[in-house]
Image 1 (tube, helix red, strand yellow):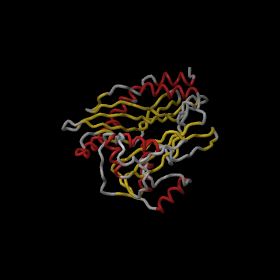
Image 2 (image 1 turned 180 degrees about the vertical axis):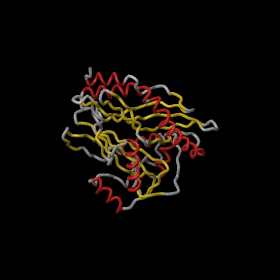
Image 3 (image 1 turned 180 degrees about the horizontal axis):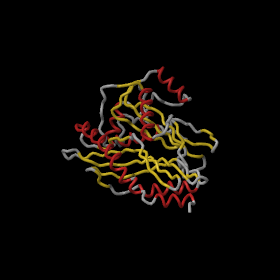
Image 4 (image 1 turned 60 degrees about the horizontal axis):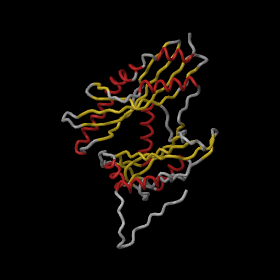
Length: 323
């Protein structure tokens, strides 16, 4: 891939200055190809595609040469640029904690469908973190406490495990259906649950925006147990009227055994503030997000997930060929 050279303008030259957003976008695009981690697998050669740079605002971290060496050893590679800000590529030893999600697709796949995702910890420098938060209309919080990069990464992994009900070791294969019936079941679940319109539950408005499934239909034994990671959007308000937006997810298990269907809502889950206009009220907004997550688990999931699966038994029995 050809490199793009950025030249400083000569003194006196009249050039149109790039906006801050354009500069940030350009730097992000340039930083997105830093890994060069194409590799072979049993299913074919995987090519690095998009890189999603996620910033966890208000989570300050610090690192050292010794810690970076330990992290590289744990990941089994020295190609990770853990000490570089993902936007401006400055070398940093402290800043805001972030996570990069590197997508891989099979060589020759014109659709570039994601087949594998690898996540790695990053440190954002202060100016880039603040610019990113401002551009995305998110509150920028400067935490009074900080922890090591490795501790922050381990905490992130633990929260994902708790929220999704599965193990995460920094690298995970995207689940694919094991047979045609499984593909049909997953597609049906997503079609039934994902919605365009919000539904009000306990003075908050929710809608399901994504359903990711794992678990196959067992045709021989005519049964299945599918874990659905259900992601939702929520819009609610503070008592003073300010609007709060958030996203979250939880895991719901749907199962078929002995020609009877069942659903189970796994404990745990995650929720985060996604948009807010007044940083001075961010603490109250965060508390509102926590309340919205509890409403989702106790009232919205039974209504917007379990309640929409009324035809699941008929669909399930048809898929497994039961008479």
